[in-house]
Image (cartoon, rainbow, N blue to C red; front, side, top):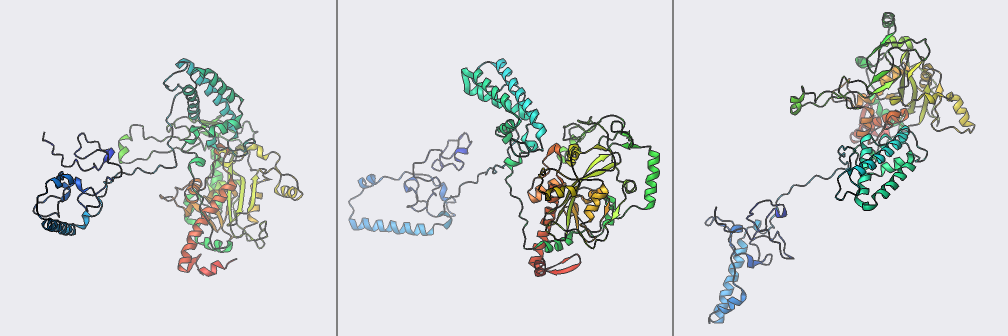
Length: 636
């Protein structure tokens, strides 16, 4: 529309190669070698090529034009100047040159300081640094990927692809039983993410076939048959190692080993065990009675509560509600193992349903079904039929009176001579964890683990024979299997064999005859004032039917933002605060020793933080008593 004046053609475009203008007013010509693109306009003659710009002088209100917008003019060359010289005398010419030089110096002196600095390049958007986690691969179907030169046609490649996929599926079926167990060939525990999912198997088969199709050409059939022979000769150990070398495994976002390089938190401090136990008094729950509405049982049930539970059981006629699928069924504790419950197999979802997060942006989707709750185990919506089947329905009761009928509660007794640890020391604090299974009497204790705190020495780790007949060991969470009871012996006998030098399998656990004996073992280390530490400790105390006055619960130390009854899982707390990854056994369940150790470390982290505060101030109040920092350091 207007004739371009090309006033800015001598200026390099600020966006350079990123410029998207159709007719840019700036220059996009490549710079000569050795010349910088950020050379300022109209600065000292020794800094830029003076032949490109005229000397504009200082900016003034009269012209109102910035120096950088002065029009480019062509200065005459040296040869031209020589031809145009007149016959004036040399002194006059010299005086003229001196006058020009003085004017130039005064002009440069008046030049603002801002024009002497290099012009800053325009701000560019800095792309965020790539994270350690890689995005998930998109879902694909078992259909050959397109290649430029198809070696045998779509039908032939489809047939080969299915053969590769079938071979991988068979190997994967052999590998799945080893999840959570130590593989003899690999020499390590197989984690759930070491075994591919159905989607992963499709990715692997597609990658394998595509690689052969791209690189083999006319010998496609020979190469792919060799790959099939290799797969058919693999065992489950070879297949797991092969899977871990594939791009499919490396791209998974939940692969902790390949994506998470964080180091565990350092829990060391300048306090010894006794000093740490003293600081931990700050976290003792002072009034358990305030927690009774959330499942804590601070004192044994009264006689009236027991009588009410007895009457209610009589009216119920052994009918219970399944803890998994909410089906009403009947329990017969006195029958044999085949007919202890009614209503047949139990179909349920092993994982709790989750609700999509609702906000203003998703409010319009509330009635569309998109925001409905779903089960993460199978991605089915709330109300769908269960995806897991077990032989029997199960139940549990949280009523104190009914729990008292199965096994009476006990208040921690006085203990003038508590049992000592393996090093001969009196235990100052104990972390314990219980695993429970379902029986004909409800949910009962089947494993008890206790370690000293903060030393972490194992005190107790034993299986427990429940009072009722077992309906389900709840292995997914307890980690206890029926075969573990076969061939197991009493803790005293196991200790005797170890002292005699007998070879004991490392994963062999002793078995005590009843929950009463397990509780007696725990109380042998305890005094009423000994801190008993746990995560969701009310469940563990109910399992052993113990009322202990001095408890520390990491649920209460690391509170959920919404408060009780909401709580943060031990697995999430360990990952967030300790950078530890626990409970990675999948369907093989939890390890109560690992859980107890993580619980103790969570408390130790809070003790370290509290100690740092005391050390800065010089003193602190712990359990109602004032302690000097040096006094805590001196504690043995």
